[in-house]
Length: 402
Ligand SMILES: Nc1ncnc2c1ncn2[C@@H]1O[C@H](COP(=O)(O)OP(=O)(O)OP(=O)(O)O)[C@@H](O)[C@H]1O
Ligand SMILES: [Mg+2]
Image 1 (tube, rainbow, N blue to C red):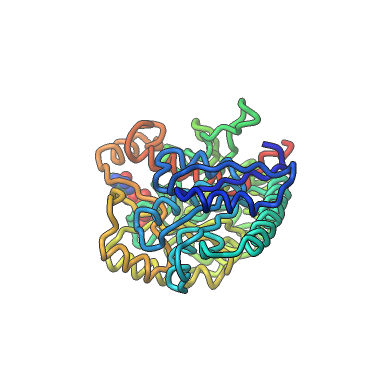
Image 2 (cartoon, helix red, strand yellow):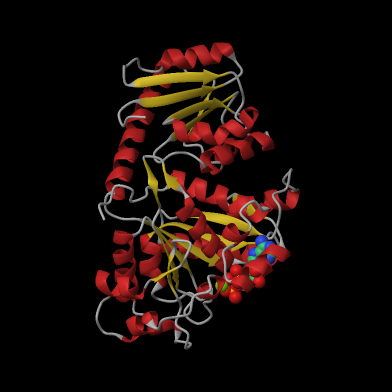
């Protein structure tokens, strides 16, 4: 797909509506439009492929249909950088309805009764927005990789498991236009006191992080290169210091500089965060493109996730926060409890990792990512999907000359 051609997809079972949307799209050689007579949920397995291949997706949606909202949310997780979603709904678009659609990832909600002229104006401005967002993404991609921070709603919930396996799943992703190169991924263990990501990868701390903490100099590329440890999977790891360091021993400027140096070198920098809220989290959050809170759906975890969401969003207003439910299978239907939880959090649970103690235990004992040891397991599939949606949504430094 070339940069300048805008690919538009129309999804509706109403042929008259489909025709009027097609008629409202400004005609240009740089616009390609296709349509499917289907709802979003009716697209089943084709949804992710569609999200990746289009810049603007216009669909009819019923905000009261839970299955449809779930399908939109999944479609949105897999969208390409800069893609815009417009939903058309029957009747008045109340604030509550619009909000449900927005939290599923829709950018604009319009009534199906909208006039052709108004619809043309909205489509025109959405096409401009996709171009602007993609330019920003491409410009960003030539300079810096994306920092993905992983936090935990309670101790032992599985945040290190997520950090290790997401890092590996991202690293595995092949770049479509450079078939012989996969992503460069760094895993940084910032859980200074209890960090054990290196143990999950069978790596011994080389003392590099402690030296960085104790030094008054700012880390540069040469130093970071000397302390990053290569895991056989291809992920480079910065281990937490083996001797327990005071949490505030890391200086904020050193934390920020370290991440900047790594972002210049890697496509993704996955960071395992400590549970405590410390000063140096600010520069980390300021650089994060995305933050995942690993949680379960118990009331204490949901309450803690809410407190954390408020804290992180205050630190970085534009930060995209994903909730990852660990050790629970994605339910076929969302229970009342889940709906209430998502409403309280104002965020949907983006990913679900099933409980599979047997393989999780085996992987930690052998010091290998689950995704390497059991690539076809339910857990590995969840990480693969997670990496695919992260990959689609974030610009990677795929153009960086190295
Ligand atoms: N989906 C899963 N199914 C089964 N066991 C799991 C799963 N995810 C993690 N575990 C296990 O749960 C335990 C805790 O996981 P992990 O160390 O990743 O949690 P954590 O949140 O990083 O904990 P800590 O608070 O110590 O940093 C580990 O033994 C891990 O193997
Ligand atoms: Mg941990």
